[in-house]
Image (tube, rainbow, N blue to C red; front, top):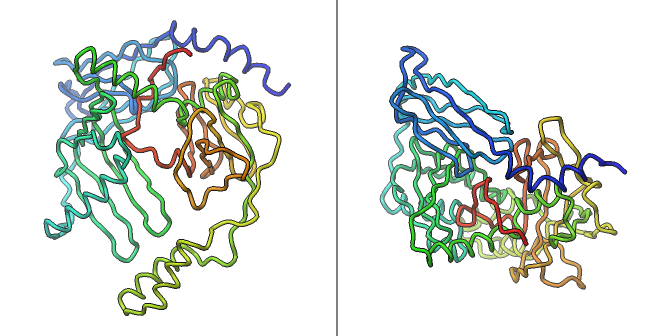
Amino acid sequence: MRLPWLVLICLLFPFAALAQLGTITGVVTSADSKKPIAGASVFLSNSSVGTASRENGGFTLANVRPGQYTLVVSILGYKDYDKTVLVGPEPIKVDVEMTPKPLELREVVISSPADWKKNYDEFRKNFIGIDENAKYCEVQNPHILNLTYNQTKQILHADADQFLVIENLALGYRVKFLVRDFNVDHINNIVSSDGDRVFEELPGSESQKKKWHEKREEVYYGSSMHFFRSVIAQTLTKEGFQVYTLKRYPNPERLKEEDIKRGIKVAQQMQRRDSFNYYVDMENNVPRWVHESLVKPALTESDIASHYNNDGLFTLHFDDYLYIVYTKKRDETDYKDIYRPLDMPNYEISVFTPINGFPIFDKNGIVVGNGGLTEGTWAKSRLSDLLPVDYVPDQK
């Protein structure tokens, strides 16, 4: 028995977590003048817990669900402050000193309104999403975004000096996002994001709140947060997850992604139809992987997870690629690079690949260290389907 500690913790966790909510207090001051700062945004990143510092600089974050968070303090004229905090039943006190931010001269990028709109449409598609929920997301201040596109590297970059505010009318949240570094890499097909966000409940009628609740439940079940929480609770099978090791190898007949993209671009510029068709066919019809198979039987929680340290953190560990099936939902999307056995129904499938070591996650089911690349169903998830990390679904 590899993880005897996990059984007891997870049997008690749903009840203990709700009973032992935490509190964070502190004072925000200026590092140079030592004077209190009022009106600073104080929040736990990716959560629905946030406030503003009072006239004396003080703040209180109450009823915080246990787990590891990033405490963020932000106000114009100062560098953003962030600190990792591990919330438990004991109160936490954090004194925050804000460092004045020197005036930075940003490189002026001249672009036409048409170019900005093209870049913004690309940003919106990759940042917010393109699913049904995305249609109900309204960006309140899009023009605070700094958008640039590198033609050579085929990378769209976005950042902002203040909160990007988005109202998600599908889930009933106002999301305030500090966009520090958002990139869409068209060559490697990778979307990466660095920033902090806080969720606020939108006002609504009882009938509207009921619809939002149903939508949130729909988004939660089958999500990565649901998966990681099920690993901790040792309820993968009960919750509808099947997990396998995926074996696959790069296709030697397929060119590197950057060579394919470059070939398409050059062929277009040189108006070489045959070359263009060759590279397009390579991109669309030559698979990236060969000799793919699942290693059976399915993996158990103790096969893939262990306790990381005494701070209530956990880590995944597995060979090759982690293949995650959610059997309670169907996904009719045709993923050309996702292997599906012929006898498997169209269940939701996600493939997880670690980056810079195995991922570390907390009791809320959120990755807090290292990370990974996701493919399949989880890779489609964008802000339109995002829930705060302290979201608690109905007990089913």
